[in-house]
Image 1 (cartoon, rainbow, N blue to C red):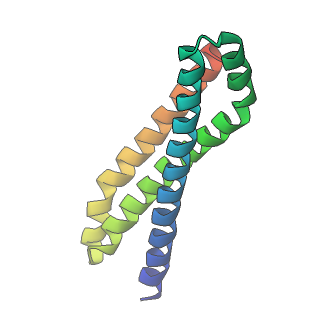
Image 2 (image 1 turned 90 degrees about the vertical axis):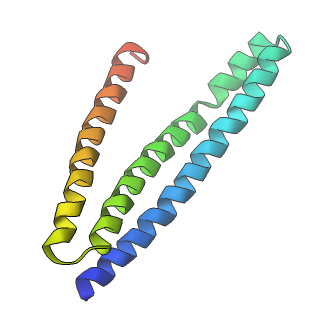
Length: 121
C-alpha cells in the first residue's frame, strides 16, 4: 500500500510538471515566433537580429522546459502503467514503455550533441 501511495504521488507530480512545462514551452516559443515573424514581415531585419539575440536565455529556458516535459511525460506514462496493473503483470506492462523511454532518451541526447557540434560550435 505504501509503495502504491508513493507511486501515486510520483505520478501526480510528473503529470503536473509535464503539463506546466509543456505549457511554458509552448507559450515561450509561440510568443517569440509571433514577434519574430512580425519583425521579418515588416522588413525589420536588424531589429529581428537584436530581438533574436536578446531572447537567447528564453530559448534556452524553453528548450530545457521542453526536455523536462518529455521526461516527466515518459515517467508519468510508466507510472500509470504500473499503477493500473497488479502483481507481476504491472512490470510486464511497463517494460515496453521503459525500453522505449530509455532508447528515446539516448536518441534525444545524441541529437542534442549533434546540434552542439554542428550548430553551436
